[in-house]
Image 1 (cartoon, rainbow, N blue to C red):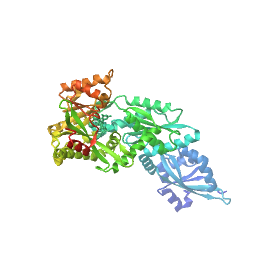
Image 2 (image 1 turned 135 degrees about the horizontal axis):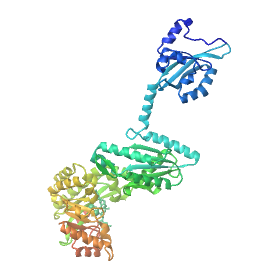
Image 3 (image 1 turned 90 degrees about the horizontal axis):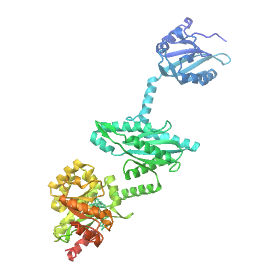
Image 4 (image 1 turned 90 degrees about the vertical axis):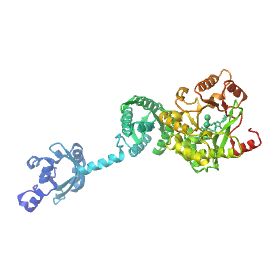
Length: 567
Ligand code: C2E
Ligand code: MG
Ligand code: MG
């Protein structure tokens, strides 16, 4: 065996010069792994002098994990094969700094093929590696909260499911959506919204264990995966604890905000075996929680899925529905009890869907609201109802009020008043014959804006009615700040006016208070003579209900009027 040679030995002439000066990190080792020579650039980068390193073992300059890899796999294999290409290592500089490198090496062998020594070229890829990590972070983590994003969540959930199936463990997927996040953003600005999201992410993380995942998958939506739950009580306990944690007041822009969220829960393997179905079902359950009112959680159920399916069906069919063919208006008379005659009509939407049959507005209006379809649909209703009112007048009917229901989404449009005014001028209906019906929540949710819009309508002489009064949480006291003309007592109170029912007291109180506030009162859903008698005894101004007439198509009303039945 020839003695180890030093590549830097003077006798190597030009090669020694080249080896030393080449601006590449190079080193040579003997078959034990001890350094025989290093290039100038090697010493420069690593911060050692040549004298310090020659004769020492290569592994002294490797990080803990690289040292293990070198001892266990790389060096033994290298001594057999004598070749290596782009082996990733971490080297440690004299000052302790770690750099990522790729080492490529070739060796000199003796006649028997044993490696005598080797020479390696080393490339510093620290910057590249950092860039790669940054790209990974950008692609897998949410920038704002630093939590896993949708992609990493899917990855983790996938792994959790695989592990759960191997080890026979259950897991829970919780879909969480903040209540009123839009309100925070709109009221305090995006900066405040961002701050809130960070707080939520931190509070969520403080409620979970190391093995669980907290991800932000969009806007104000978070997903938590709880691995290895023992019973359904576990995610419920988590949901309760988190809702409690979340409701601790938060100071944002100098104001205290109480946050709430709605949480939907799906369980593996009970509700699904794959990522998509678990996320979808947790999402469905979240919507059900929202519908129940805020700050609550719901487990997924098949009945929920049925409802979600129906909603989707309605949504698709409604998009296809043709106004004037599948969608029509019916009109229900409103009767003044003192004058004993019809003073107005309420326009009510009817949908005869070719696939679903007759669909009640109570089912399709909320879907139309959610999808925004209510905007074109609502405009069509207003246009059609106003046109009908003018047509009846032209046909010789006495001037009657036309009441039209307006949803929250329509009412909150900044151009709402303009739209109403345009339709009035297009159809030629005088504003005093139009009445706009709004529910309590429509006006109460945005009090200041609502007062401004209502005043705008009122100065144009349009009538304003508050619909389904008593079902919201408002009191008549608030109403004095709004320019309403009429209160419609909700059907639920009128339905049961029997002796001993609280409703009698409620209805008389509403009527008495309305009188002091100078508001007209109309009772909805009057079906029986006893109800009518009671309302008369309380001096309720008007009634609407099956007792007098069901909502009917325009032609039927025209005919009834022509035959004198409605006079
Ligand atoms: P609403 O505005 O409170 O309308 C009164 C509802 O009570 C109507 O139901 C009407 O048919 C029903 N009704 C009237 N008299 C009686 C009665 O004596 N007994 C019973 N049990 N019910 C009676 P409908 O037509 O099913 O409408 C339900 C709701 O859908 C309406 O409640 C309204 O909130 C909404 N809606 C209907 N049409 C429109 C529309 O064009 N636009 C908007 N935004 N919402 C509408
Ligand atoms: Mg109404
Ligand atoms: Mg009503």
